Length: 129
Figure 1: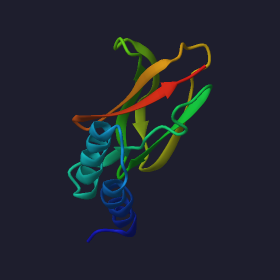
Figure 2: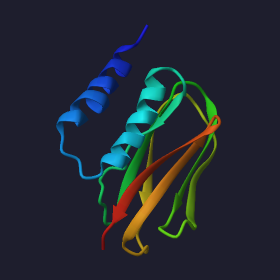
Figure 3: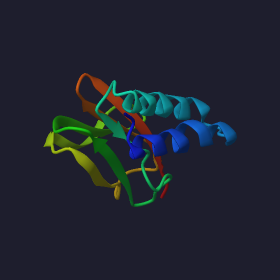
């Protein structure tokens, strides 16, 4: 049986975005596929969009784990170079928030990768100085 949290996810990320004129439709579609896999129980984790985005000094990444599992969360620049590894350990189940401090980094597009189970989820944020 679908729980309340999963039902809210469906409304927020599968129904509402269809009414929004999103210029980054391909990014939204990738996020939607990750979210739907989470709702269907095909995966036991979800990485949410960075907030705020764009950011100047820091942005917060949030993720949900339905069970304890080893995770790796890292950041790459637009050249694909790893800038920083934010997490590389087992986390308990539940909701987690990780603050990414981007001070000292150049303006540009940064990609956040979350690897858990046999999947990698990707979210993108723009840093402005």
